[in-house]
Image 1 (cartoon, rainbow, N blue to C red):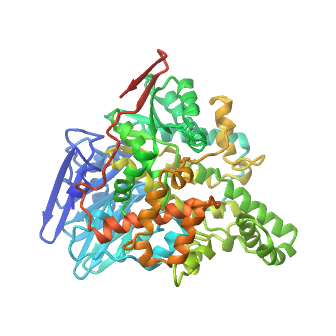
Image 2: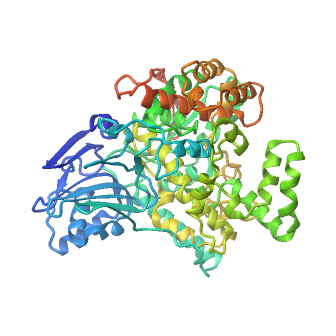
Image 3: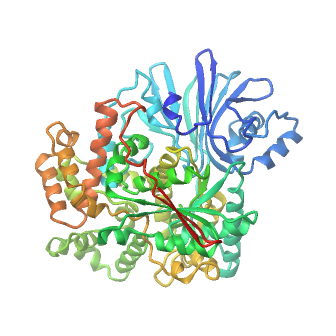
Length: 628
C-alpha cells in the first residue's frame, strides 16, 4: 500500500505495527528535515500518528502544550498534533489551522482517529469490510487489499455524468468512501463513528462598512500568505496572470524575505487559433515582471497532452473530467525541478463569487421575483426556442433557486444523460444539492457559495490540485482557503462580492493600486485548455479508437446509438459536445486502468514529456534562458 504512494512522499517511509493495527507513511520533508520522520509518538508511546499536510499555527500550539507539561523530541508540526490529541482528545482537531489528513492510533483505547481538514485540501479514503477497516490518501493504496472489489458504483456513475466528477462521500468504486471535509472518524470496539467538527455559518452578515471590511480582508489575506511561507525548502507560486494568482504573488513579494519569488506558468505551442486563445503566458509574464519574479514557463503540445492521459487518470484515482488536470501536472513537474512547496490562487472564486454563473442565477432570481408569470411561462417556451443554451436557461427560469442551482461544473445535459445511461436518475443530483442547502439563509448568493464550498471545491478543484501536485512530490498551499479567511468572507454583504456586474469586488478593490490594470480588468478564463480543438483534430482518431472499439467500457455501460451520436456531433462542431466526449474518454481510461487491467504504479502510461521545454525569465537581468 505504501509503495503505491511513493510519489506523495519520495523522501522517506515509516511503519508502525501494533497487534491488529498498522500505520504506513510516505514523507515529503518540509519542516524539521532531520527529526520529522513518521510515525511519531507521544511521551509514553501510547499513541502514534501519521499525517499529510501542514499545521501553520503549530508553534503557538507547541508553546501552549509545553506549558502544560508536554515534552517534545522534534521540531515538527506532526508531534504537536499527537500532543494536542493527548491533551484535548478528539477535540484537538478544532485547534488546528492548516491542511491535513491525520491518522492516530490510540493503543490504550484501541481506537483509530481519522481527521480531514475543514475545506478538504487533503483527501482521506476509507473502506470497511467484514472484520477489517482500511484508509489511505489515495484509492490505489486501498486497491492493494485483496478483499476490496473493483466495482463501479452506478449512482456515482450517474452523478459523474451530471457533474464531470464524483461528489463525496461516494467514489466511483462501490464500497470505498471519502471522509468529508471538516469531519472526524473514530473507529473503536463499538464501531465507526463520524461527526462534523466544523461548518460555515451563513446569514450572520457584518454591519461593518466597506473600508472596515476591506481592511479586515487585507489583514487576513496577508496573514494567510505569510503563514504559508513557512518552509525549510524552496517555495514558489503558480502564476496564470489572472487576478487570483497575481494577488498571491504580490502578497508573497510583500511578506517575503526580500528575495524575488519564483513563479511558474504553462501555455501551449500555439499553431492554431484555439491554442493561441488558451494561452495566458503574456499575462503571466506581465505579472512576474511587475514583481521581479524569477519566472519559469512550460509550453505544452497536443502530443504530450494525449500521451499523458493514462498517467494522469491513474494519479486521479477516479474519473475527473477536467482537462486542466493535464497542464497542471506538467506545470507541477516543471515547478518540482526548482522548488518543493508552491502557493496558488484557488478558492478566491468560491468565497468571493468570481464565477459568472452566480450572476446569471441571481439575474434569473430577480426576474422571477419581478415577473412571476415567467416562472410558469418560460419552461413552456423552452422547447420552441433554438439553441440548447437558451433553452436550458428558460427551463431553469421556472425553478426555485434550490431546484435550479447544481454547481459551477456542468456535465451532460439531462436529456443527453437520459439517452446515454439507461435508468439515469436526476433525483441523485437534486438530493446531493438539497443535502447541502441553506434555504433559511437570506442571501441567494451565499446559498450557492455554500453548496460549491461543500461539493465542487473539495471534489473537483482541490482534488485535482492535490493529485496533480502530489504526483510530482510537490506540496500545494492555498492561502484563499485559510478557514479564518473563508469564515470572514461569508460575513460580507453581496455588494462586496458582486458589484457593477463583476465578481470578487473586494479583492479587486484591495489590489487596485497593486496589480497592473490589464490584469485587474481581465475577464475570468479559469484554466483554459484547447481541448475543443484537439478533440476534433489531432485527437480525433484517439476518441474513435478508444470509445467505439468493440471492448470499450462505454459500449458496455452506455446506449451505443447515443454514444455514436455524441462523437459524431463533436466532429461536426456542435457546441458543448467536446466536453461530453472528454467526460466519456476519461471514464473509459479510468475503467481500463483500474477495473479491467488492475494497473499497478509501475509502467502506467508512456510519457512524451522527457523533452525540456522550459523558458526561464529573470526579469531583474532581462535574460531569457531556454533549456532544451
